[in-house]
Length: 58
Image 1 (cartoon, rainbow, N blue to C red):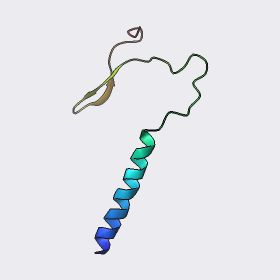
Image 2 (cartoon, rainbow, N blue to C red):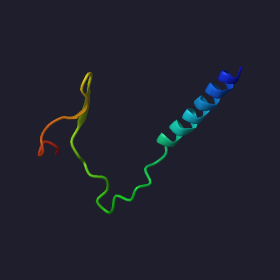
Image 3 (cartoon, rainbow, N blue to C red):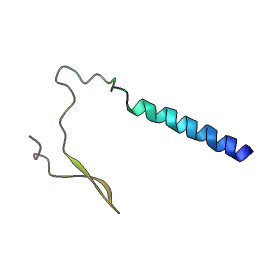
Image 4 (tube, one colour):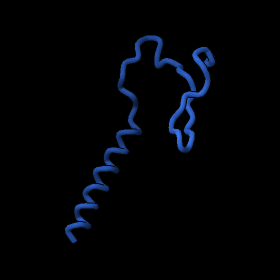
C-alpha cells in the first residue's frame, strides 16, 4: 500500500508539472519577437537533429 501511495504522489507531481508546459512563454524576446531558427526533426537512434544549414530558413 505504501508503494501505491508513493507512486500516486509521483504521478500527481508529474501531471502538475505538465500543466506548466501549456502556459504561455513568459520570456521577453524583445520587440522583434522569438527568432525563427531552423527546423528540427527527431531521428530514431540519433535524437533531435537540426534540419538544413545555416541559411535555410526564410
